[in-house]
Length: 536
Image (cartoon, rainbow, N blue to C red; front, top):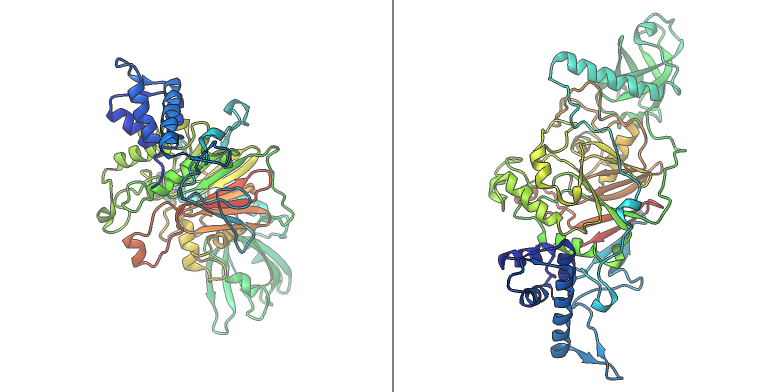
């Protein structure tokens, strides 16, 4: 059976009327038999004691180990006692505690044993030594809507946010396109070469199979025609309403339409070179925990948390969670039939308990998702004060969705990823599918916007500025939402969609979603290489 976690140790202590220092809990949880160690600690303290100290815990672990060695120990050829590795612990030649495979993109995938929790022997030490938090670079957070929301939903608000989107993305394109305003194009002579930067207002095919696209700028609209036999016709397949593009071509004889020779997206420059950390340090990127669901994978989560305490994970100093901490209430039809915890606040209380299993010296950053108790409209502010108090474990940094989080000099664009649904619905399979979410993420980077279409299933809050524009190219783009593992690279930006911690629900079965569960992509911040740890 899986090893008891920190939470199980705390529950055992509290059920017997004892508190414990944090260091004591870690010592007890790291024991070969944590519950036996807890019992030994309770038996060993004074009757009037209320708190188990680290010293009490270390003494109890030694006594429990001695008792186990006496009754179960074996001897080597010299007569000495041999420590037994944990039953079922899988190790590979590289000593990483699991079986290695390599994904199609070169990503290392480690099938982690469910019992890979602690070090195989107690005598070799059990808790990973990480850099002290005082020695780490401070975490910087930008593009956070929390406390800055001004949108009231008026017509003027929507005009403001779309104008802001256009202005910022147009600036990225005007160095490549000789832009002329739409009203100036209308006055140019037929046959003139011209360019325009505009927002896609309409896309339709003609009777002859050509593509007619209507572009809009701040002065008006203008039609452009992409001939079906041109190589750039494939780019039309990638267009979405409300994204900003640039086109160049030649005006028709009557000057009423622009025949397109080239299409330009804001995109990530191919010459982009990401920043990396200047020391060996790693970050775990996860999402979609869904505590409160009957399908929440508690044992797999505990195996992951246990692994974080091992020497294999000593370089993992950051945990970034991209939304959906809990299952929520009323998110989809008949969800109440699949809930293990029906009260939303109780769900967050339980999530906080599971978060306590994570090493206390890790820096944690969390953003909300569409199942969380914040507004659905994006950008989403971070959790309110009541929920922040509930989830105050490890002084986790809570920020909005999306946010740009910089750790060790590496910028991570954290976005829950609801817009991936829109891309999968609108774009051809070679550009966006649920099976390969990293491809949809690449399209968002190409468009330099996290949610281009307006008016679909996704809700957008009209703010004074468009928080969904990708002004600066991130080094890592981290999403979740679709419950599928996706790791890739786009113009040297590392892409990670991190799977989930929830087994397939009845609702997912009804819509044919097979989730990738209990996966923890680990990013080396010096190289941006990814190792996926799978705790199944």
